[in-house]
Image 1 (cartoon, rainbow, N blue to C red):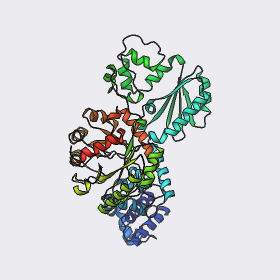
Image 2 (image 1 turned 135 degrees about the horizontal axis):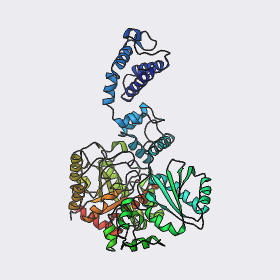
Image 3 (image 1 turned 180 degrees about the vertical axis):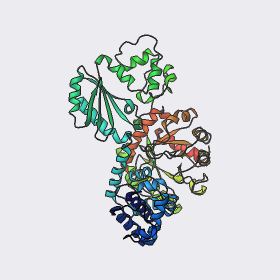
Image 4 (image 1 turned 60 degrees about the vertical axis):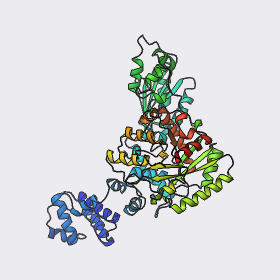
Length: 559
């Protein structure tokens, strides 16, 4: 065994010891030994324990550990430390800018166990108040984590939206008279983007290639047939398809829908398809109503298009209010009044549902019963003060291990609405997770089921649940399901929206905002709600203030 693996093992052992707050003198001794072993001019393999003891910086105790490592490939003490430490926590120790001491705070005080949760916490602004952290450290961690996330070639829609739109503006400037449109995943508003496809109807492909190759926005530009392949500076793949104007709408159609959707539409066309002048004509030829790009995944909406019964998809302007939001009472950045004024004056909404963290969320300054009552006093005061606007009293109540909520009924009944969410003990088998959720759903005060699977896109899979059983329980108990609009969550997944809607379950497009800028995440919730076929009449926060007040009242009264 070379010395470098030995040095790495010793270094990891010292870091884990620091993470678990072992004797600092022992930590320093092992860290120094790791440094010296790495610099030795001779290999340690083949040395006896007595020979190892005589090497400067090793000594008797470490000699035994190194001998064990040489003989077995590991160390008992290291394995014991690893067994006590979640894999995600070990991964976080490799993030530039945070050592074991800071990882210990992140893990033990903030309850964060992997890089995905850390990225989410940074976006919630939760790190800046933790000991040893600040805004600058938080921003650096975000940069490192975004670079890591991009390393797998996939990006969140929200991460690349501005860059893609900027590229499209440059293309418009180069080809002012050409037909041009974004296609593929981005046009379908997919939550995760692996490639940006742009179709251009241009008469001269060589000129198009030369112009695009000179853009600072693109790198590694190559020409292959009708395709100009490149990358954005962040590594996102770009495929620009240059075709004759006569072929433009057909190319736009086949490059917008996924393969299953395109094949299903073309299979319905029995006569030769002449080059269409619009996408609508392709669908008309197939005996279908024109389908918005968001619905062009698979065959889910084909029959509805054939019956001219496609849903009128919800739009951002249909939203009348915003629910599931956090203020300075827990881990938010803005005060209740600042949030209310922003929602009323900037977003032109009718109401705000505040739902700060509950008492179990100690890492997020969750509200004790006393603080709940104090917050309600402030809400009453603001509701008298604010004209043309209302704040609803809510809470994001933690779902405990047994499925109960973390306040007694006499407190729960004081709220206008309850968002019930799981935040802790996420490593559950499907049956355990499903039962835990269903018990919370059956609580008479649960109004909304928050981020049902706990997933963090590109970061954390989330716990497996039996979606049908959970949705059926929501239908039976008149519980709304959240579409958490944070770009990292977008949970409930859009593929389950139709099942929920068919069962009569309303959905709520909630930003889970922790600062005023976070309210704009409802835009991303709208994107996936449209993919799922949501209409405004089945969206809780598209109801008027009068309508939603009645919904909350009926729920509290058990009607």
